[in-house]
Image 1 (cartoon, rainbow, N blue to C red):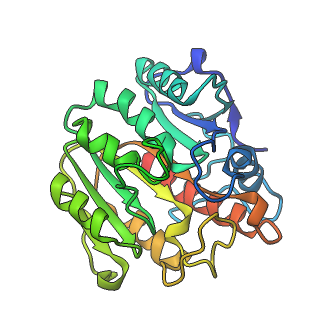
Image 2 (cartoon, rainbow, N blue to C red):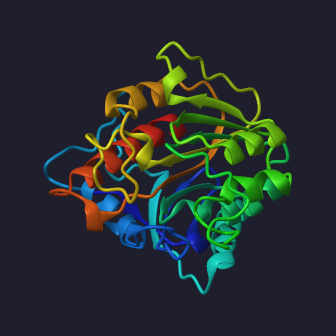
Length: 271
């Protein structure tokens, strides 16, 4: 029992391609997220849980959901290639990271197919820095690169609790809708008319719920609150990623299971 295995070349239209992005070279503080993708799949398939989502979708060998393994990457920008291959098959990319810098090359591919794409970003951090420690492709910078290159129509950030003067200026510059954690409410409506890409950084959760991340930022969402937002999301989701799970900082595989739960509920929205 488990998720179907597949290869990118064999994808069918409307398939959901789970793809590992084992890349963490743009991490600013602690390496480790490159080891995460296969551990998330192992957690989904663990005998300690089942394959049902909370809306009773059975993911066990679901014909549209396929684990395509880790992408073979030569460098940072090679991340774009397998995403483009998935899109060329009219399939849906669901990437498992990896550090958050990967969302920029992913968006370079997504923008070729969806000119009116919107992003929903669950994150403790805005990741809007123009550069960090001299690295313009740091995992603290991907959304600055995405927005300045006009790859998406707009960006909505949820759970931010590390705002700085510079990032506030960047958010204003790019017209980003920022829902800071101090202003968050369970009553917030997430309704979108255009195609939506969901990027979920595991550190949006309070570290009490997800200790296996590089940057522990107290005061975040509970797992239940995050799941609730995903479940009530009213949008045509055309791609997802779940990033920044760092197994080197995890406790008893707890964050792997939380990551798996997030992936499962996002898959429930897709299938």
